[in-house]
Image (cartoon, rainbow, N blue to C red; front, top):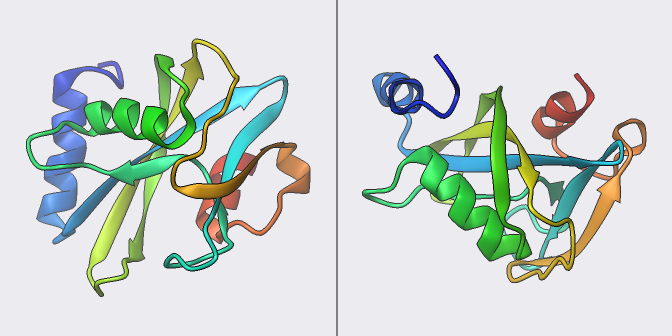
Length: 144
């Protein structure tokens, strides 16, 4: 079963729901020339100043992959060409005190520039061995 099959994606959602997870986030690991795209949260946001991979909330009626494509485009201006793999998930406490599960996928993009930020204050193509301040979960995704 491929990571883009409806059955695989529905299984991810069902497992999260069974675990009592209240929020879903889809995230893109975008690699280019041995570097990964990171975006920095605005200083006044929840977890402000932290670097992360492009990600966002799965809206009602939307699949995880639909959200992955939409959020990547909204946050960076980049268009996902292909979803190439599923690299796992991690859970974290969200700003409302609930638990969010972030589903992480490796993707390719049609073009790597221009990057147009709408929700972050900076971006960089980082070498995995020289990451800025990222969460331990994101570090594990990028360096494993």
